[in-house]
Image (tube, rainbow, N blue to C red; front, side, top):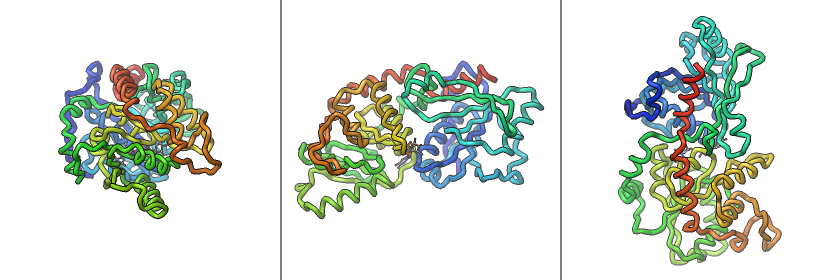
Length: 396
Ligand code: TRH
């Protein structure tokens, strides 16, 4: 990957720690873009603070789209199973080992790490970076050590590190220059670069899986009569929207008479441009974890589709987040509907597909204050990379 973006130096908020470390970050791609998205942002932010990062990935195709320019200070290496020791065996393990989202680090690599520690007399600095959640136990588990019982890492300790929404967690990924870049952002210019002929219409970005409420929401937008352009992101959101539009046009070609709703289907954007999309929009529909955080930083009303899990635990996680947010009833109800939960509301029929009259009101103008307050609160807290570096400084 070429390295066109120099890593800026000396603009770091972790001024209390002038030391620069070498990091090995391991990332296994489950599906979608979230694992890569978080690991890449983490790597870039470490590099921008003067650290050297090796990012080991089992699949890197998604990364080429998210980060076509790479980043100086971050080397992306292939994580084959087992690790190709002929090619990489000569590399010394780094100061800090990060397993992202509980992925299991290669045994050969761990053996080398254990040897390195015993040769240098240093203590292990092995971090299990967890998923983002607003659930209460996150605060309790954050920074807890775990003694490895078996395998080449036996007797070493690793620490759980939880991103999160409160001071008692590791915080959220946030660049040092975020606010400055936002203040310089030219919305109209950015939109015209992406072929959006914007004349003041309401803009809504859409990044989602396949919400059953998508069709009813489109109907509700038409009924509400506010001219709106939906900026549909590439991939699953585009497919879901195409399916919905095809069906609507077939059943009732006049459903969007007069073109009150317009649609702009975007190509795959780099992470930088994805953030710009959220800054350019009046309302952001996001999904998973990383885009939720980015939508918070964008500071506009947002609707979150949580990553669905088979056992339904995502509903609990969704409510934990809504509680943290202090979501008003309208925002809470709309989230429940968008995530397939119709608690507390009567469905007007017994079919699986919700109808527009079942959908709680979509009133983003009433949600702005809540989001502004949440963003302000979070800006007062240390960001994830600063918390991590602080923790390492006290552990090493
Ligand atoms: O892709 P996701 O649904 O990721 C999910 C969740 O993170 C989930 O927790 C995880 O377990 C699962 O994957 C495997 O949503 P998320 O987390 O918002 O990640 C999307 C990333 O893709 C984010 O970094 C933004 C980026 N992106 C772009 O850079 N350009 C684009 O055009 C689009 C659509 C996304």
